[in-house]
Length: 117
Image (cartoon, rainbow, N blue to C red):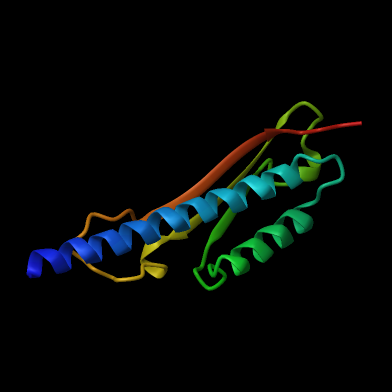
């Protein structure tokens, strides 16, 4: 009976982990797509991330974002822009089951080519 409980908790936690990883990666992908447009600003990209993370239920997770270059508007046409979103997994775990090997951080990192006129 105990083994069945452990397997069930593991299945629930890992399913949750994979769902949240996909949502974080999707938010980073959409933010990078916006950052790659010619008129993009950090404020626009940050607003997009905030909206998506709220939709995914991750707004209170204390996530961090990093842009490369630090100001996406300064990226040269044909150069790259990178968006990284990181979330401390302990803040979004669903079961808080300590016997499972879980990551400490979930991250989505996406690099795209800056578009231009």
